[in-house]
Amino acid sequence: MLSPDVQQESEMRRLICELLNPILEKFQKQCVNMMKDGISQCIYELEGNGMDLHSITPVSKRQFVRKFTTPGVIDGSKWVVEVDKALVLKVEQSAKFQASSDFERYADKIVQKICDKFPNSVVVSLNLSGDLWKQSWLTVTTKSGETVQFVTKTIINKSRYGNRFFQFPTRVHKEGDWKAVTVY
Image 1 (cartoon, rainbow, N blue to C red):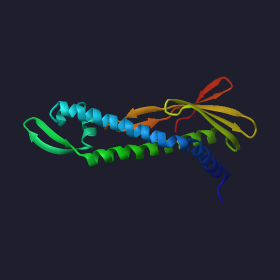
Image 2: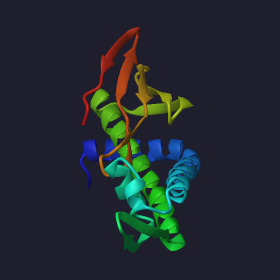
Image 3: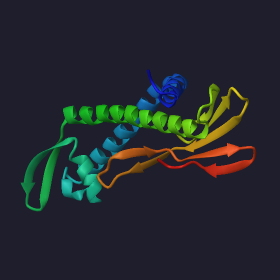
Image 4: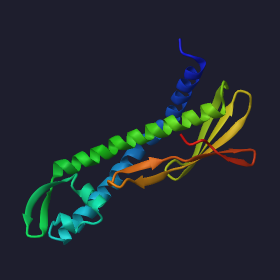
């Protein structure tokens, strides 16, 4: 038998996923489109510079371009590359997988935050409003009638290697009082 804390988190996760699942497909499409735009921009830049990999700056962007190109010939000071359609497709699919991963991370973090805020309480309703990818308000109501809003802003960051990832800073809004939630 699971401990009450584990049962609470498990039930909360189920409720959150139920609430968020309709949004997942849209999120995946958004991330794949973002990746396609990035790839198109890099290909345009490459074509404008004779497919020379060294024309791509900064280095982090060059590392991104290497994910969907095959090495060509080194011609003097140029490193001519070719775009590989199979690699482009692989990079786009990895964006879809990454979107699912980020979505799961968001669900896990919000579950943890709710469970920390309401230990041993039964949550009776969840209501999500706003745009999950910009700023969203998750209103949580417990059996005892306590209501709290979790306000989450989604930040899209890019690692030095060109990989995009999401962060979900959240604050609690309760009766006119704003408090930062512990960052995990």
